[in-house]
Amino acid sequence: MSMDEVQEEIVRPDHYGDDDFDTDLENGKPKKRVEDMLLNMGPQHPSTHGVLRIVLEMEGEIIVKATPYLGYLHRGVEKLCENSTYTQIIPLTDRLDYTSSMTNNYAFVRTVEKLLQVEIPERAEYVRTIVAEMQRLAGHLFWLGTQSLDIGAMTVFFYTFREREVLLDLFELICGARLTMSYYRVGGLDRDLTPEVVDRLYKFLETFPAKIDEYNTLLQTNRIWLGRTKGVAQISAEDAVNFGLTGPALRGSGVNYDIRKAEPYGVYDKVEWEVPLGKNGDTYDRYWIRVEEMRQSAKIIKQCLDQLPEGSIAVDLPTLTYPPRNKVETDMESLIHHFMIATEGFDVPEGEVYCGTEAPKGELGFYIVSQGGNKPYRLRIRPPSFIHMGAFEHMARGYMISDIITIFGTYDIVMGECDR
Amino acid sequence: MHNIALKIKKACPEGFVAEKEAFGELTVVVSREHLLTVCRFLLEDPSLDFDLLVDVCSVDFPNESPRFEVVYHFYSLEKNHRLRIKARVPEEDCSIDSVCVFWQSANFMEREVFDMMGISFNGHPDLRRILMPEDYEEGWPLRKDFPVEGRGWRDDFAKLSQDSG
Image (tube, rainbow over all chains, first blue to last red; front, side, top):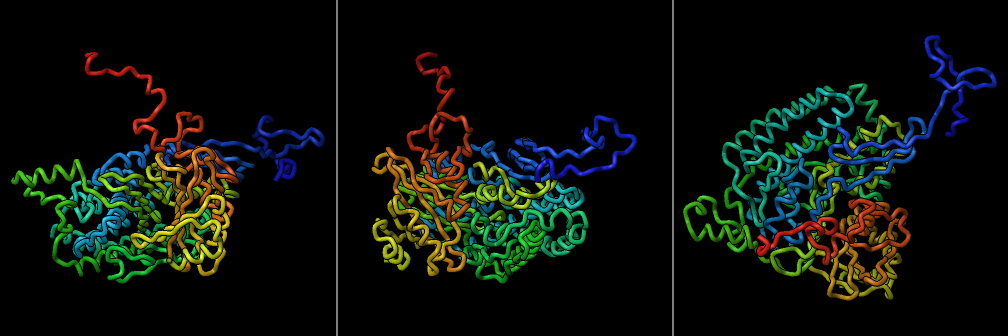
């Protein structure tokens, strides 16, 4: 649309000053102006959830081109990993997507275990699945709260953070931390679930489905929510695959790809659950999918807790796993053992593996090239957020400027993971 | 030989270099001149149908020749199989063809490889630095000869040695 085409006649209200409109000199009537504008958004913006800069080329209020500029949170994690032992990398993975650090730990230790070819005890697999699904709940609650807050529905934020708080308290009970957990270990877990955690988790699950209904009463038929999410950031299934979208962003377009089903790990093949799929590929469908995934996650956790077997939570390989904590405090040999694993780490055979894990945001993959020794030769993180940003321009084009918040909220991106 | 590797060898015998199966993953090494032919085959052959380009990354082997290795990970949503394609790139002519024509997701991933390793992609629509600043001139951070603590203005800092105290 060019400037000349939009020169429509409009009625000038009496109280407007002369400066408010350009006057068409020929017939003495005011005309509406549309300007091409270059708008800079960020890197500091409350709804970018981190430091992201977008340069918007506007034609009036319509976005013609949106170019993301990344890297404001780049810390060189991949380079750091090349110089750290495998045990030292686990805390680094926490800081990728800091809203779901458990899943990051899980994705990393799975890749190393694939290289080492160790089998994990059954109880450890169950606990890993339970904790990963708790993290998915926390991640989706975080998304729902912040996305609705960005769009203008403030109440939902308080509701979802109420439940997220319960989960974070449980994480604190499980591993002592609320945000950067470092709970998973290569070969098992840091510590076992206590009976108190199991009890509190059961109690949480009893009330949680009703809480999801509560969020839905605020959103599902809310005119503003519908108006601002339906048909916004729409992407077809073909394009979504071509742009490499994964996770809820891809399933919103109706593509059935969930690594938990396609290449089951943990105990996902031992419990019953479904993969919710969308139809239209817009923000509303992705919202619906995340809400349904929360229900499914609750179902998975419930079944895992019911089936939870007794046994060890780490593989019995002293070269790989830490000695029990109580022994470290009383036994000299165990202390030395603990110290050696923390500083020297363990040797990993030569080879290369890629292992993808279904994180709340999409496929989080680790590719490790090992040449033997206790450090990876090359470690590549396949971050879903970064790859989703690649589709941003395609998805933002043609929408109004007010939709831009919805559009980057729709992928659930976290810049810590995007920039690494 | 793995079924998929056989098919690639049959479709593009001049580009096929080697195949390896380890840890349940298939790796096919191709020559960089024939990367696009192989990629077109991967995408268009109905029995392979690799519609999702999962990842593009690179590995630096400073003591080997050719020095760099560009690694592509593919996944087929329909067939549920994975494949890793690797191509070697020499240091002197540090470039390889871009696969953006087939998978648009390659755009950002190739930009990252360029940014981190300094490998250029022929035919890439917008090859600029992506994570490092656009005016960054200190080199390619993920190369093995780049120090972990970084390079640049920090090098000029006065440093204390044990004797100077």
